[in-house]
Length: 178
Image 1 (cartoon, helix red, strand yellow):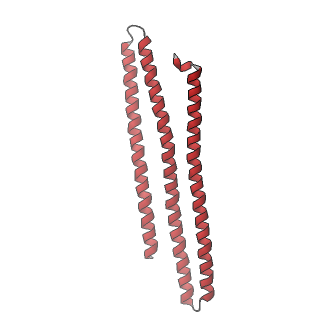
Image 2: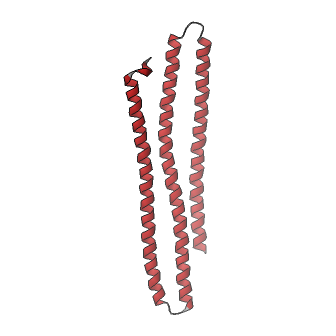
Image 3: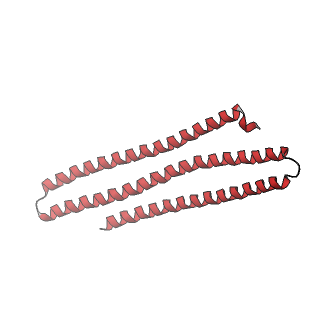
């Protein structure tokens, strides 16, 4: 069979390395986005802290102090809500990239199994047609089950994205109305 040839092994190894590189790249991209996000929040907090300190030094009465405190609380809540929403978005984006690699691997595996069944059917002994038909049928059912699971996963990711977006908007609206 062709599956034990050195070329097959070389191709499989190259594919595995390529998949690892793609997953690593997607992971690093997510980490990079999180680092940029945290730096932005730190910069914004430092800037807002400086503005608040300046406003505190200029406060002349308790009402001014209360306004500064309310502004700081509002800023903190907005920042936390935005951070949570952004982190969820980065996580979902990274999961999508991983899913894409996984789907490519499963597609390749499906093709290999299909080819193996076809190769076997060409050289199968007489009377094994029902066994080959059973193998084909089982593989088709497995493929359909995988497609159903993949579709459900995509739908779950889409729902999660919508929920994160809605929760982020609702949180920001709540903070703004407070």
